[in-house]
Image (cartoon, rainbow, N blue to C red; front, side, top):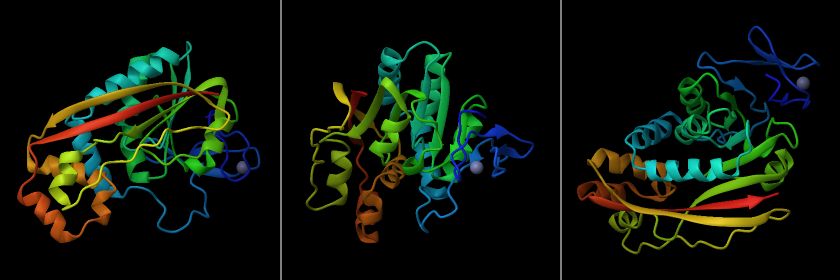
Length: 267
Ligand SMILES: [Zn+2]
């Protein structure tokens, strides 16, 4: 348990009967699925990440393998920069599709995975007991300073100052973002006037840019349920009227583009 910190006082946690405890006696429960709940008590309402339905949509979609090319490439890139017995942090891991892939690919790595959604952590924790899982906010990482070789984030909110704090000197931050054409056919099917993603060159203070890898392709959508699950994973879902959602489902696209950028930065 010495990889996580108390979310109240910041001291190291040790394993206890029910979960984890710090030297000051702050204790945290371990869920049956295996993650420790380190969410701060004062978390603002409505800020608990993906709900059960969203997590299920994401899980069902990802398990079909549509984003496997991204997972493969992410594994390759992480391995390229990881030292032996690396400590890797998946910050905002969701339901753990990438976490488990990276963990298996790296072999001897210590894998930490965090997400603010307890529903997501439930699935991640069940994927592999060896992955150290906690429900936590990326804005208050319960992780020791300069303890992580590689921190990565796939489409998740990020907190540069926290990431900078936990990454070791000369360690890496790897950031996966959607590129211009990502899900273009899906957007065309929903909106009368769709717009492309604007991708600005991303810069990080106190980090140097190392490289950018593009991952592009076309998904042959198996059925309309997969299209709906994909749609539910996007931010458009919440900005779209019921009418526009109906429009999408009346003629779901058979082919949808994916387009990602993997950005590598060194501290
Ligand atoms: Zn404490």
